[in-house]
Image (cartoon, rainbow, N blue to C red):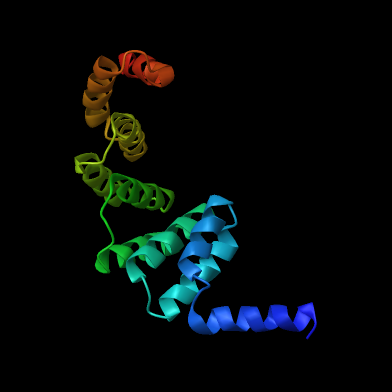
Length: 172
């Protein structure tokens, strides 16, 4: 038997016995920034009814990276419904998706959930607070912006990203 036929038999055997893991491949594709390929792996895992929590989360990440924010948000919600681990990163991605869809109240809700998670690092908390200020600015809620900027600058005086906002608020 030549190598080509042997290779086909090995691939077929792996597929039949399940040694090829769509989840593992999907994660590898995510790490390699191959989002379309990752999406296909996660979709297959969902079609097979396997690892739904992680497959939906992986699918949501791939969709987010592809700019499919509505689909990403749906996938993240499905992940939560299938009991995926609730993490600050997951809620932060949900907030970012909602923000891209101009669903500002939803984004704020997800940011709040992310901030309250035990695994939310100080660095992520700072980024969430920064993003919340941007949301309130977009919504035109200047009183909340003033309050949040004052608190942010007090807690993170070294962060110069807020300098122009502070200058603007001083003119109001």
